Image (cartoon, rainbow, N blue to C red; front, side, top):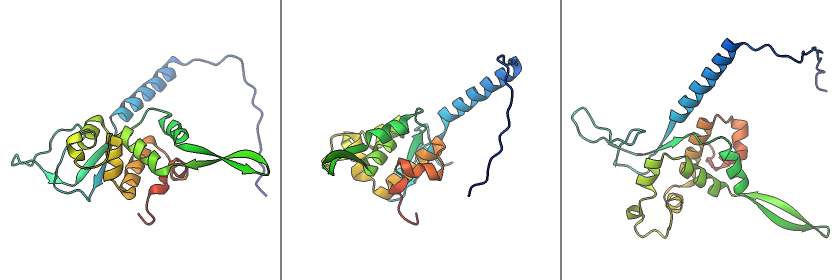
Length: 191
């Protein structure tokens, strides 16, 4: 049996004292946090693709002290999404399937994990990164794709998509228990 909570009755006046210093401090905290969130970037290394010129989060080539372009694995950069985007996309990728039960039509919900992961990773990727690696038709070669998002689905495996989705969720500040409902099941076991 759960422990019983004791509540306390508090009288509340209809007027709330306004403290302009506290209000200014709250506004400053909100503004500085929002500015920091706009500049936060997550990097995900895709180790399968090697010998790629390295770029910083701004898209500039990274050079060694000798002036040579640094080479390494493919690094994708992600930014924080606008508030509510994850939940809206969750609804978009939930498919309602009609099922007949006991003579009545009811609806079961099925979630498209892979489609969700690809779309979230694609829209959260920094625009220069998306343009350079996935929206560039010259890179598509013989792939049967028509969009950068389709090319991304063809080039990244489920594990790599899972890491990209994890990076976006960390930027969003989602906890482990909540992330499962947003498609985190793509992450391979033990990974």
